[in-house]
Image (cartoon, rainbow, N blue to C red; front, side, top):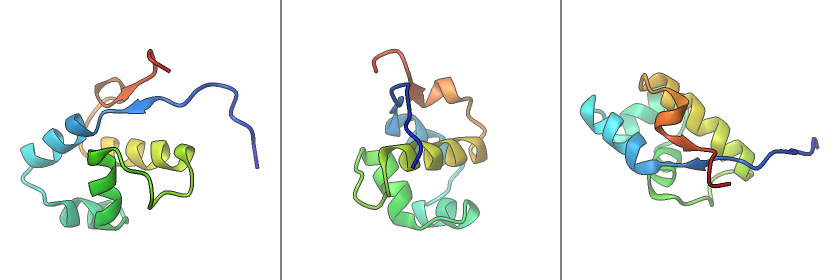
Length: 82
């Protein structure tokens, strides 16, 4: 498994949730559009991790969701505090 040399960014779940609700999508609808399960969306928005294989996986899923919602990474990922 590859080693990640840079710290992973912190996910701002509130911004993901706001973007989702601004588009009038439920967690389940967004999950379906992104080929995920609703639990992934809920955990991204609430800062939980149990349904992700690793922290890196969680960041990759967040990027996929963010792209779908039309967000730039700086709007939901914070690399400065890592």
